[in-house]
View 1: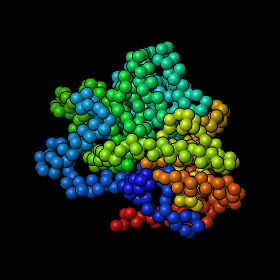
View 2: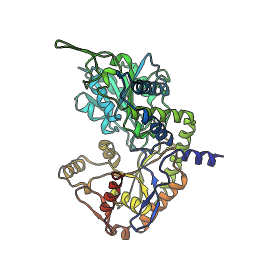
View 3: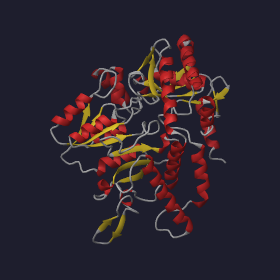
Amino acid sequence: MEKNWHEQIRAEILGLDTIVPLSDGTKRPYINLDNAATTPPLTAVVQAVQSFLPWYSSVHRGFGYKSQLSTEVYMEARRIILDFFGAPADQYIALFVKNTSDGLNKLSQRLPLDNAEVLTTWMEHHSNDLPWRLRKQAQFIQLTKDGCLDLADLERKLKKSRRPVKLVTVCGASNVTGIINPIQTIAELAQHYGAQLSVDAAQLAPHYPIRLQAGPAQITYLTLSGHKMYAPFGSGILLGPLSAFRNGIPDQVGGGTVIAVSREQVVFAPPPDRDEAGTPNLIGALALAVSLRWLARNNFPRLVAHEAELTRYAYNQLKTVPGLTLYGPPPERYPRVGVISFNLEGIPHGLVAAYLAFEAGIGVRHGCFCARPYVHHLLGLTEAEIISAENLAKAGKKCLLPGMVRVSFGFYNTKTEIDLLVDALKTLRTEEEKIKYRYRIDPATGEYLPQVGNFKAALLRHTKTFFNL
């Protein structure tokens, strides 16, 4: 029964039967273990987009039938998204943005934070670090040795900050270790000390149910990306209270953001128009809403449970690979989404990723995953080692930069795929000397490519086929 259910679920994903070339000239089905970066599209999302495209037009102000229909579709998408996260439309606004990074940058510009502190953490993606850091108002919550959030330090900083703390902003789940932060506890602490809570939900929302008003303390702001939620059409969401966006100058201005402009004055529109400059990404909005509705109708909690089981299985199977180091606490001890980072002793992380891609047909990611301070912490780098890495980066020598290999799962992945990953890593471990000689490295990019053949040329030929239809 479970197997039949999961086979039906897998059939809802576009592209699972894609065959990719290997370095020895053979081909095999692609195994995507890079879902933390981007998930493949749901067939339901693609079908919805295709069915709507003949009716596609510009939203707002147009009075032709297609324009009126497009406006209604755009508004309905917003309603579906608010409902999915338990955000009443009379209290909350869902602003369409390009992605999580765009949403967090907008939030950092829109909140009136003068003479106030923002607390973030050292485990954040750069998107939830740099917007606050560059405003020179951020303090950073410390981490435990194994990469968890130090809640005692959070409370200490809430209590003793030199300026009032108006906002605590944390990732719902780490894109490096998959650790799920205790959001309700953080929300209660923030509320107790008079601060609001922003959650970067890019990694959490696709893999865990979130309700803004669940529990005694609430999430104030929530940001996420459609391309990580099986809707790769360039859209994301910033959710927040209506009152926070009712006034003030938006971070971007222009078409659609005003209701009146004269030589003397500018009158801004009410939300959401006030904060959605220009013609919006209607297709992206539709795609994200259809994806969320699909998750709700296909037993999202069951999909989450499958991913949790897969994560536990993968973590324990990876431990059987000789010389493999795993980062972050085990899922039995600390809740995690399906993100696992590791290193193989004596083998550069870039070479591990290249071998998996070119000889096993497995897509993973390597490097620091746009979370360098966190990766440095997990690797235990000294200050001198970090400075050395920064100097290498400035010099354009990416081949020696520290990093990890990351695998990440979606609800469609299987234990069989995990077994193939582990078998490939064990082969790499036992045959590493022979395998190392099969690759060359580009010092500027840090990429490992097969010595035989011309992969880049073949990739370029494949690329051009999409522009010659």
